[in-house]
Length: 355
View 1 (tube, helix red, strand yellow):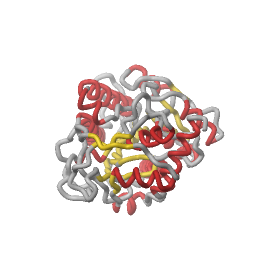
View 2 (tube, rainbow, N blue to C red):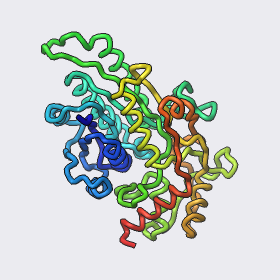
View 3 (cartoon, rainbow, N blue to C red):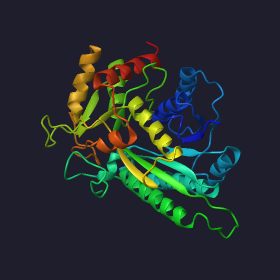
């Protein structure tokens, strides 16, 4: 019988791409989402790509402990991939309480139910933001986590620590019976620290669909190109880099989704070397914001209206991954080129604009 994976936040950008790859790899998937930052567009796209109209969908808020508990009661969950979190760096600086409440409580509820239902494999959607302003690049999994530069990054650090401690505790005490005479199960965990997901599915049926003003670079690029936005702002051209703009590790969202599938398989097939593992998921190639804008123009034959704006709070100068551990241990490697990724992003933007 196929293993069942719960994808919290599964109707969103990354969650929808992961759902496609899980189904195509033979897993049964339950999607849970409160729809606070998406609509049904991508979930409907998932059904078209996979040819599956019967994908279970539960509209719940993972901050609601009773709703999460019911989810685990109604479905036998073998693994959870947890995406349900707020994710905008700038917004988190302005609204830290909102970020701490949502991102921590939702994950605590997932872990609690995982533990209470006999144990579970939990894959946490972490981020390169946990490294802060790293002193040495590229970053490896052993690179010290410096103080986060934003509340968003801090929630990722805190959730990693909560997962690590939960894994350790359930390994030590999981066989014991708690005060409610409930059998607790061991939780095993993997944190995927990924860098800057961009692009869309090659079918152009799913992609990034931000509500309101985008917080990420590529949707702002494509919305400017399509005429939805008058001008693209590049935040900061005075950084200590070759062209003055930030350096990032941009990874195609489909490559990223495939990394989640191999990580889940590693857990479910009993191939983990430790009960809690961490992997960097990136390309290992730094690309500046200015380079990415120029690459989009070139590959799609367009000219963008852009301007340089002041630096944005919470942004680090440069971050990119050393991917050797993921390449060797997971047998995974990013494959799609930046050019193919930006072409897919543009195809998706044109499709949702009806052009």
